[in-house]
Image (cartoon, rainbow, N blue to C red; front, side, top):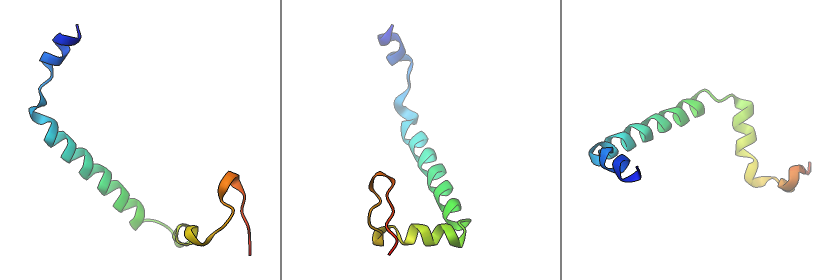
Length: 61
């Protein structure tokens, strides 16, 4: 059964499928970044400067 499935699969299109998938994900991430609000951008921007993020802890200081 597995051998039949492997013979049925055509690997000649894997490169094109991977490229299309990559482009779709890249476009999604780019659109998400473009339409991000200022509040979201500020939250993401300050992540490296925050301490106590582990286990949901947040240290204001």
